[in-house]
Amino acid sequence: MSDFPVPRGKLTPQRDLSELTWLRVGGPADYLFQPADVADLQSFLRDLPKDVQVFPMGVGSNLIVRDGGLRALVTRLGRGFNSIEISDGEVTAGAAALDAHVARKAADAGLDLTFLRTIPGSIGGAVRMNAGCYGTYTEDHFVRANAVTRAGDLVTLNADDLNFQYRQSELPEGAVIINATFAPPSGDPATLHARMADQLAKRDATQPTKDRSAGSTFRNPAGFSSTGRDDDVHDLKAWKVIQDAGMKGATRGGAQMSLKHANFLINTGDATAADLEGLGEEVRKKVYDSSGITLEWEIMRIGEK
Image (cartoon, rainbow, N blue to C red; front, top):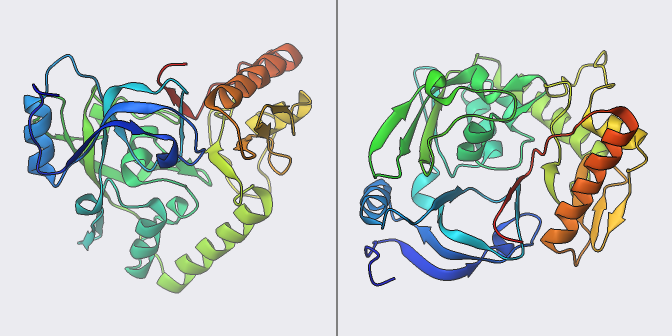
């Protein structure tokens, strides 16, 4: 660490990542960096040895860190990066702002980002993964994002730069999103809040929200999110093909495919990352054998086994 720059924020060597992820598994990162502010993030990345890999981490809601940990510097944005500002019909949210908070704040101002309300995670992750729900995606209301590159430069990225696709975007390697701006449609605040309450009730009725999970495990083979409408077709939904392959409720060690929603991988208490990823791969194989469909992971898996 002697050749590392000295930040104003917090730099922790050999930081266990398991307690920072929703699934509560995984080994240590070489370093965890929590910058004090944007200038601190810029100068630190600029002066960091070029061979050190940088991995930006949000709230760990969509992540399996493997048991061997991560040979990288993990950046995690905190309090200085969670502001939510609303002006002239646009919402600008810090990358660390929680999706649910942004949805509620926007609704207060009569702006419709209700699709974010039930998405676990933060705005940086929503942009990175083009998060979506009820047929609406981050890209639909996205205007721009500011990010700090691996070289420490502050850049503005538009939709073309990010090349949004279903459940993914193309963020430059090692770049850290610091905020994003959206231009949502307007709506009546009371109506928007009522819609979100309805969405939450539906989610709690159909998903294992009380269990340790990382949200949806696999992308829908159909290539789009559930719309939430009554006429939604389920044939090419991940949960349906998993259920049809007989893998709903399947277990491996402390890992289980939820009995409440077949596309949720849960840690029942003592799962390792290997249990979780291994069960996921078993599900992929069984689904392929039964339907010829290759499921793509939606949960990001990083680190060494």
